[in-house]
Amino acid sequence: MDAIIPDFSHETAARTRGALWVVGVDEVGRGPLAGPVTACAARLDPDRIPQGLRDSKMLTAARREELYLEIVAVAEVSVAHASVEEIDSLNILRASHLAMERAVAGLKADHALIDGNMIPRGLGCAATAIIGGDARCLSIAAASIVAKVTRDRIMVDLAQQHPGYGWEANAGYPTRAHLNALQILGVTPWHRRSFKPVHNMLYQEVSVSS
Image (cartoon, rainbow, N blue to C red; front, side, top):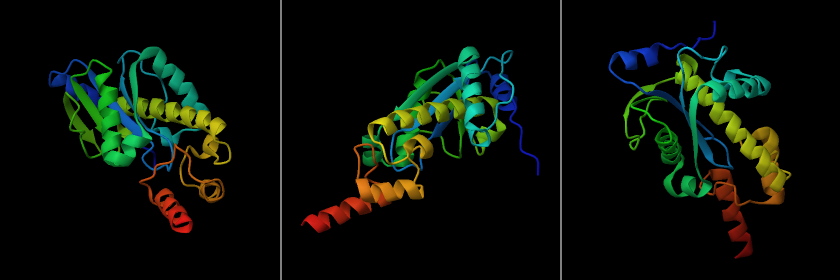
């Protein structure tokens, strides 16, 4: 089965309905045990759309980096985050929506195309949820690439501060190497305490020490 190629039809439809500033929105980092959740809002110039935009998960890291540079050179982009503390206090879904809301707030936008099946409640503009949007909508694909590259860079930086967990390679996701390191090295301030493997480990430490 051939991969779906994203197009500009969703943006065009929103413009036909009267929208002037249409942005695509995506987030990355719901699944990791460590690090923030990162969102991007991207508004493409219809006459300067980089070639080869795809869902970021379909691209190599090198190709994502190339497209990231092309996107930020020709498009309006806004990146925002929700912190580990916000993830733990709100829950990961609400925190990811908060990151999206913050990203949209950083751009002039009157219609947001959101990857997924839910619209964040605090967007401040009209919105359309598009399931699989990062594979179907060019603006969302662009947002997914910028969000992914930005968060990966953050995790590489954090890996320098907290070596041993492999964040430079696993971006905080629960790989076997990361889980093993968690058992050996313990929990860092960047670990999400509300996530089960981290929570269970902290509970074990309390039980052992009490």
